[in-house]
Length: 329
Ligand SMILES: Nc1ncnc2c1ncn2[C@@H]1O[C@H](COP(=O)(O)OP(=O)(O)OP(=O)(O)O)[C@@H](O)[C@H]1O
Image 1 (cartoon, rainbow, N blue to C red):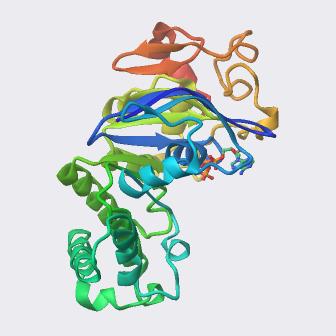
Image 2: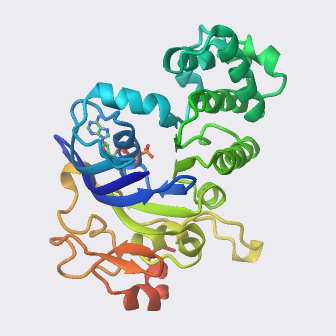
Image 3: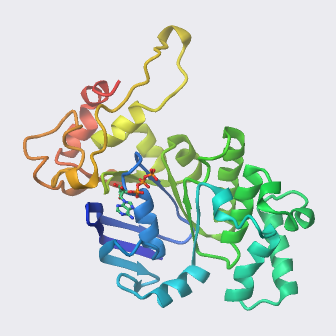
């Protein structure tokens, strides 16, 4: 349904997404993970045709076989209305504070599907039910500030589903919510994806959320997709040194006697766009860096049932785990 090949996004300061390649089929649940500034949102916005005017996109982005790279706003608007939808991390700022939430959810149905007011109302109420909003009739008439954070996020999900999209892009949808509410929102997104055979692109820096929400994951660093793999296998045996760093440094519960107050980290920080190396973007922070890593972009190789972009061979990535992990903890 979505096919991306050699997709890059440039700003004046540098390249925010480089040579992305992946495909998304109906019903797929794909995670995008990486540190702040690694290009997750820019990638999502390029799939929605919503990049800022200062961005230059190159490569191929096909939706249902139609090339969308270089398409005009009218073509994108048509696609966005019916096929693609996106939810963001802060539901309060995504909802109009002066409109009753029911009216907000009805609007795209009136504009894009041409439904009568009565039909739009019926459909919006059904979506409130489907997204688990309690007492839908009553909530329908309320303003965003009268709802809890979790209810607001459910309203945003109902809004995203208004025109029955085939792809839902969720950009950090649970960041602003407490852990229990976040868990319920993730469960809802998974149920909706399964029930509607709707693809879900789930963007997060929370590996636990990605584990629950997705079946496949793409790890991004400095604008590159450094590893793609089935979620379960990547969480058990990541290959790319950056993916290993992410997993080795995630906070987890440890027995009291092993507890150390220091949180493990990946030394250094993601450089700003203008300072990213022309070769492997992780060079400078990578514990197994080779002499040519900084200058040459890494080849993308098949690894198990995924791909890894690294100068090392599969043997090193699979067989010498400890020296890599030790560098991070
Ligand atoms: N409009 C813009 N103009 C110039 N640079 C931009 C613009 N938007 C994003 N960038 C840059 O592109 C890179 C990727 O940003 P992006 O927002 O995609 O990161 P992210 O992984 O989504 O981070 P976060 O998790 O913090 O949302 C960053 O270096 C960012 O500064």
